[in-house]
Length: 89
Image 1 (tube, rainbow, N blue to C red):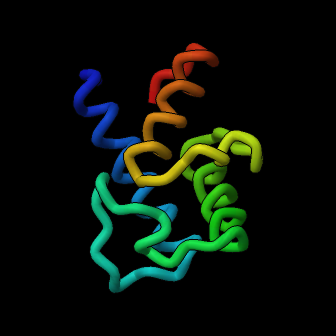
Image 2: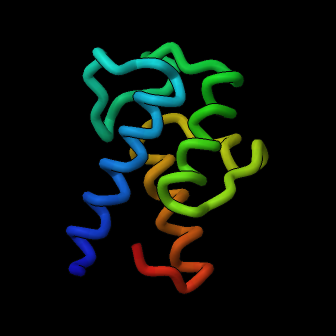
């Protein structure tokens, strides 16, 4: 799988995790969407973290999410975890 396809796959999985974890099925979500603009609170982030773990196999702790402001930030966090673990999604 190419790096672009892998990035797009992770981004799509993150977006779907946000949709399900924060109950935003009918909301338009893009890489540039801020978590604040989506109305995501700490409980939503906990649910999103569980969704990401189920979908991608990465456990995200609250400390990991502290600087996460956008969907793109969350995708980058997953990619950094992926690189650190040697995993290839």
